[in-house]
Image 1: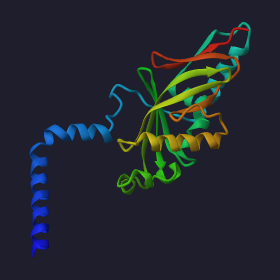
Image 2 (image 1 turned 30 degrees about the vertical axis):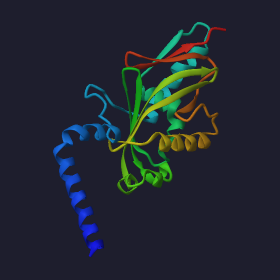
Image 3 (image 1 turned 180 degrees about the vertical axis):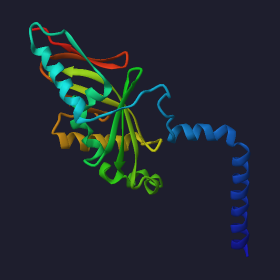
Length: 218
């Protein structure tokens, strides 16, 4: 009898909590949503396809930095930079990532693709979210570029979303670590992937919607 009353009391408490949560949802829901759902990049962002067709011309322009009479910098579109410099690092998304596109907003470079989530690795650490993150879904990665040293830049990830759901920092760190191992690249830290740069490049910056590579002065 007392066990029954205890269970009934628990049900009443759960019901009261549910009612209280419903009437106070305007207070707590925006905060919870902000933790797990990412706002899409600004509508003004222009996405362009990443393909081998843009890599060739970009490579030729970068090679001109090695000429003494060549330009002191090269300005690349987001898709040109990703196709020529960053494409190896995109192995973090798996070999079957489809329809990759790139864009820049402010000082952030974005890459998105249709990804088979199984290729990102074991996502069971995400708990209930792992049951939702299955099959092929849209993945968006955003990050900032920094020059590390001669021959190396970093792509510091500030956003990693799957169908607008934010991945926890621990899960992102594991994905980036696997990408680094696939590349055989030096590990910078848990939030960044190393990118190879030509020895003729002395700095890399995002400026006015382009990625600018600056020439190393002999």
